[in-house]
Every structure is written in structure tokens, then in C-alpha cells.
Length: 276
Picture (cartoon, rainbow, N blue to C red):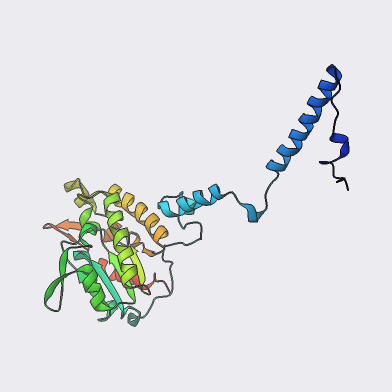
């Protein structure tokens, strides 16, 4: 039985006679056949037939850590920035560990915590020393940040790191080190909530006296940090919102120091910006 569809119609089978008219007929027939084939190839495909190259491109964008500002949360819609919420009670931080430099030691003095939380701080700490620097004490021995965090067995981990590195480390190097450390934290504490903090702003006196401590560097670091948090799907505490203006950080006697009242203001911000 002959097929009756247009593509296989007997009217498209031609016997080629001699002469120019026959050649023209043959050319027209072949042209029509090629047009039908091309239309079939270009016809829009359904959702189940997506171009595999497009999938590869999407995977690259998700893993690159770079995206347009409007898509910082990634294609899955994850927004790393902690929102404003009702203030938590102090016991919320009972299982929290705060890891940072001298600013973190000053934060520990805020009355709001009421003795809750573990504060691991070192004046020397910067993102590159998170991996291997033995800057903390555990059981009477010097140990790394990773080992000290493990000993605390936390449910929440806050990394308040980077202010010490602004003067001599690039934003790229600091963010890469933090990303590597987050990967190791995830392996060690797969159920813990991980929060990274933006850097505070420096006061005018510090910027004027120390060219390496500039708020333009702080802003670039914080921009890249937000992209990292979106990529790793960890939370971002925007400490820069409160540690600015009258509460900006100053470099005094060689150490970064919180302004008067800044520790309490910072604690209030942490209490009202949580993962729930």
C-alpha cells in the first residue's frame, strides 16, 4: 500500500524526460523537498527536547560564582542575605560559634548574648589563616579554626573574617580562601547553619592615615562575598549596614577597634537578622 502523506505522495516522484523543461521541474521538486526537510529541523521543540548545550551553559553560570546583580541569588532563587526579623532570644545563640579577629572579641562583650555562644577570636586571623593557622586554644593546646569549631560542636557557625586582610590581600584571594573553608565546614558540620559576614566600613581618620584601609576595597570585597554566598548557598550577615557612620571601625594603636556602642549595635543587628 502506498503512503498518502504529502511527503511521500506519488506526485513527487518524477520521471526525468529530456529537455530544459524537465530539468527545471527536477530542480523545483528538489527545492520543495529540501524546504520541507529544513522546516522539520527548525520546528520548535518541546520542553522534553532541550538543547544539551543550553544545559551546559546554565551549569557553568551556576558554578562560576559570577552573575548579574539582579540574579545574585542564583537560578534556584536562593537569596543569601539574612532578612530583618523579630529579635531572637539570647538562648538562640547557645549553639552558635563566632569565628573572627579582634572585632569578634569585642563583640563577645555585648550584654545581649548573656553568656550564650562560643567566641573564637584572634588578632592575627584573616581568611588565608582559616585553613591552617594555629591561632586558637583547645584543651590547653594551640589548634586550627577548623579543629576549634569541631570541638564546640555548633549548630550555627558565624564567620566574621576579613577586616584584617583588607590592607594587603586582594578581595579575590580572601573570598577564595573563605569559599574553600566553607567547603571544609560543610563536610565537618553538614547540618550546621553557616553565616558569613560582610566587612565593616572604616572611619574617616583610618582611611586618611592608612591608604590600604579604604572603603572602596571593603565594597569590592563585600560584593564578591555576596556572590560567593549565593554560589555556596550559605547565609550573608550584612554587618556593614550597622558598622558604618558613627559605628565605623577605626585602626588604633595597630589594632582594629569598634567605636563606642558599636558592639551592642552589632549584637542587636545579629539578633534581628537570623535564618529563622
